[in-house]
Length: 480
Image 1 (cartoon, one colour):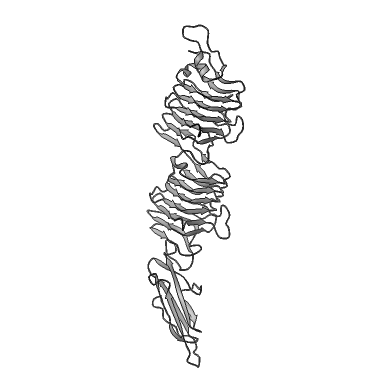
Image 2: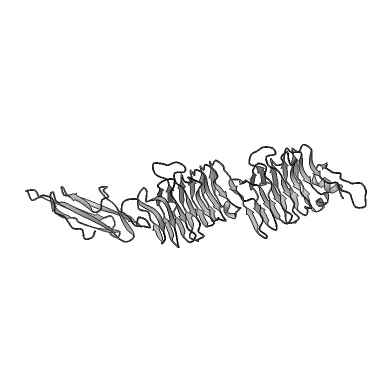
């Protein structure tokens, strides 16, 4: 373009009238313009705008985007060529002044810059970030997905960084003619690159087939972002995928859950996150068995409850800690079990109790809460148990087998089943720390001991089979 010259192809008037045409750049450091001068009326000229490295041509001051630009001289005229920061196109190159279409595979480092357009980039189909490529999305970029089959997939060794700001967030959205939930697919992260940090980004109307943002065995930090209008789930973690940070983010108007996870993860609750107007406003957990030895699983208090679709079991020598104020919801006919070698630390407070309840507020909605622990570190303090104990189990809480040595105090059992707490073996209560518990709604007895108990040296049992008591303390007194 720098070699573009003035073309004298028009017919001259008889009179020798000349006009001046000037053409300049909006910023001379961003690009140069050639082709201006003084010409006879009727002369056809060509103006050419050439961007410097790191910039691109956007448009002329007369709103035309042709480059080179052909003009017929009829008057004095001054034109400005507008340049903006950033290269365009697939991987960063393309026709200036137009949204750049991205498709296929990117396998080298690329920065998607703000092109100064309403839509900077259009993603048609799935764009694959492959190899060791790192794609960085700068502040103010708008990325539009062409249809519900369009998305981004980040390979195991690639990276995807979004560097928006509060003043200029990045936007990921569906086509302009379809601003409805599910108008594009989603973004999948298989990578564990430390550069996977997303800040000040808005993802709207995605999740055509499942989830807007899927972390599949990879990691990502999400800060100051918004997920709005997902057709299904907002954020999903699969195959050990984790959040390295989750802060100041809003997930709203999802057709299903704001968060869906295969397993418990420390960062699921995050910090200062909000969840609004989602069809299922809870954190969905699919994995029900915590069984890795010497591993501690933490459930942090979140702004919304956790939902365990298949119940929850703690096995082997694993430890589960539950933060005060946490709400745990259970599906129909599921249960909570803590095995003999497991440790559960559920330390609520009077102001922030830990709540175990059914997904629906119905009597006997889920099966039972079974404590088989023998670990003195196991504590249930200021816990509330609701909707537990259906007609099959006839019990809400079960102290099973040789369970002993744990603490159960300041708890409330709210049930409409026959018994509130069922104790398999009265002997186990000698080492159980129990005080100030409340049992409501049990129709046939607050506490029942299944097996008879006879004191050493006596012939007659002091506790008969299925004998009921008002409290655990009453059972302990009976066997003293």
